[in-house]
Image 1 (cartoon, rainbow, N blue to C red):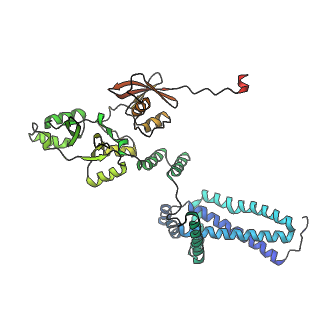
Image 2 (cartoon, rainbow, N blue to C red):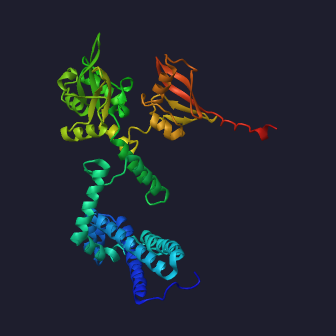
Image 3 (cartoon, helix red, strand yellow):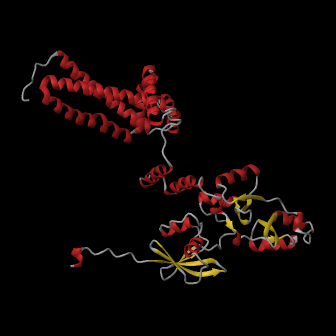
Length: 438
């Protein structure tokens, strides 16, 4: 291969020129593909407001990416095929069979570096500049009807092969992939840590059920139907609550008759009606199942203008209450008002290094704050998890291990676990190998 197999002809020269032109075009198209894929409609509109040239075209392209993506990719595929073919022909004519192999290797190296890596790296670093620069060419390609028709036909064939009837929707990513992208963006400081937490809360919000955020029945402050307005007002003042469920107690259990508002009680008491029954100011209560999604409940609260609902279990029994604030806290975290300053943290550090954990603390919060894996989809609280794991009524001193933590029952309220002690277990020692044993 030391000498040319044949004399270089004019046709060979033109083929070299064509290969060089194709290299330039493919470089430009690679820049366009990466730059435009990183551009959003909002960003393009902001550029138009700034008066940037080609911003109008950019807005049209980003508004409907399907109109340019397929024609662009088809053009790239055609040009790469033509370029590779020309390279093989020229190498074979000038250097014979061994030259074809060498030409292919050089072609891959040159085109990967110049037509893939360089333009796409530039597009990542300067996506706005690259998008504005390539918008005119991409607009022309997307408007060229033969390309659009051909790409649409090929995509149709692909959809039929893959699914049988074609895809009803375009490409998408699942929830876990999206959360992974959010996590990566936070690590790269593209978004703030608080923004990452809010995005994750919004995604998880759609899967959250009322029973996960409600105040359970044992923690609900209620009043009986025989209460007077003045007596109910004393409970409001003592507990610092704005709404109280009214119960009708029978041998079969408790039934929620309605709800009284603190402002109604105050107005009635100021009017001299303190000795009257609360039934005169009682309002209708909204009863919802514990399996109702929280996002649906919030929309219902907005639509029907109520802030508190009674939660019933699958048998229709009173199981707890849920407020608008409980729903919002699932999104933005704990909301502390002027009456909550004395609330105790459900997880407190002890001088010994152990931790005291409220039995009512949610499993999600325990997992996050103790960095522990607890595989339990049946219970909502750590107390419920320990109770369920024991499989019997708990006793003081009962122990349940989870990951690197040991939970010890410290305090009971009847059969309900009130407080647990969390003790970190020592890391397991690595097993000895044969060499170590010797």
